[in-house]
Image 1 (cartoon, helix red, strand yellow):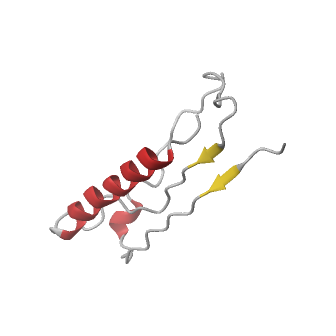
Image 2 (tube, one colour):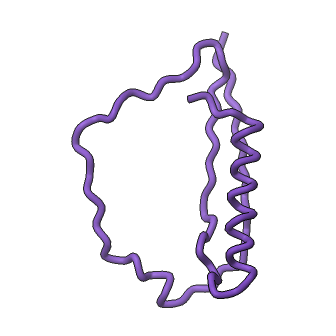
Image 3 (cartoon, rainbow, N blue to C red):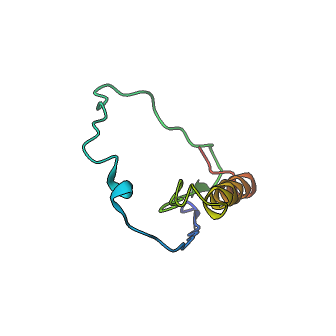
Length: 89
């Protein structure tokens, strides 16, 4: 019997404002790990699920009431999805 795959696409499309402040992390370096941390393990007999959250724009308009409220809303949506879907790792 083939494995059962579930793919959920959650897209939060928010208006984006590009400014020089958006690029303040440019040039930042992150050390690359050269040794494995461990193996990813899935639950046996359970469907394999992946939850993907992308392009959330955390910290946008931080100087207004709107921005921080959207960050809290985004975290709430992610927590709800992860609670309901229980990714299989």
